[in-house]
Image (cartoon, rainbow, N blue to C red):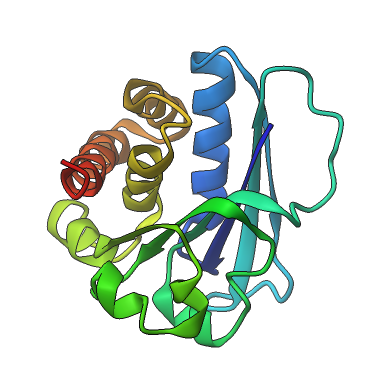
Length: 187
């Protein structure tokens, strides 16, 4: 089973991204999945968590994800507010929305221990394609590239199902743009 933790701020769409990933994995990818939030103080801008589990068999654990295979950080400023590194397995993947390069991020002690780090300026991609700094689908695309946990085409189908058409098309473009950019670093 793969366990994913999403760090965002109220209004970033972290839980929407967690739901999109679970829908893509289960309905369109033929696997088992679940997604759920942990909001804490429910206000715009406050730190929030979203969780996704993906498995090849029924998932009976409905507790908060503590030890995870992947951490996705939608807002880099959260690194100074919450421990985004907590519980990330030694071979886990971190995907972070940052204008800094991976080398720059690794100067921070927390990032230095991360073997599989993908940094992407998700805000720039979101502003370019979506015309708003909401980065959830952008970071979903980067996470797909970094982990291979689902197919991009399944994410596109999930977006079509969960979002109205006027939002679905640009968000599908955002997923693909981030996926391509994140994969480009590995070529």
